[in-house]
Length: 388
Image (cartoon, rainbow, N blue to C red; front, side, top):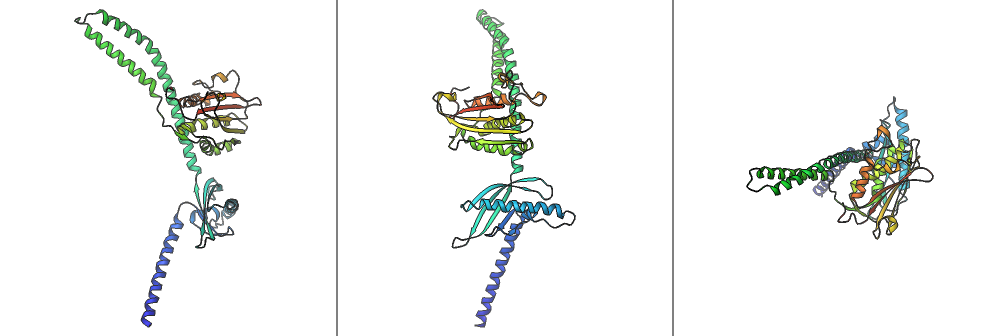
């Protein structure tokens, strides 16, 4: 019995050591996860957090900066508790939302995506709630810059395309005259004439020049992959990308999105570029702040501009001063800008080209009460097979 008891004690100690090692290992992992993690009980009281979360809501007490850091940490703690309380109204075991907290060291505002999961015991009762935060502000800023860079590259490519089209047009007329003259000479000169060989070379080279010109004209029209695209989701993404910039300019966004909006065959990246460009233009049109209203709706009648074709319309309206009537017919022309030296005059031209490449249209009008409305209409099925 003594030996059996001793063996049992050893097994218990061994199991206890393994449990302690596993607990320490999990604690080490928990402490070193870069994303803030906070565990709360059923009363929303914090019972555990990792180092990243402590830096936000429970910083170390440094006498020199205690007051400032403590104030920020207290404010963050209150915001987190209030956010968790609102989120708890949702009965789903897994919930998520966005929360803005302040970095206690830099004072920078952090945009955090918070995912909340309930921890349940074997009988299904909730014993704790785990909140994992991910900083999405920098990711959105990078995405915004990527889209802006893509739009800038599109503008450069469009400018190059316009230049190529202009050059091709100027060269093509005399080239056609040369080809016609060579054709007449070839017909008049016998095949055994010593000069016939040189005329043949000239004909081949002028044909090669024509092919090069056609390639120049098609160079700036890259093909895009069209997939079923949720325009409402693109609008949400675009709003999130420019939220900080709009906040600085005192611009508020109001969305009136059709809930059951059908998906459109489109290039999501290109359409997002157009929406981003229209929203930023609207914000810049309101120097003292204002409201940008983004709305979506579907059509299936001739009033949409697409007879017997289902289409979706996206409208971006601002509360600025509007566009001068004499400038309205020219806003989609390349290199025309109402921003003076600040604008390239290519953004709306590129946006119009994107809409047209999708078989759609982009239009503008002034609002009766002030401001401008840009309307982009896209056929749900994408461009027709014979669309340019």
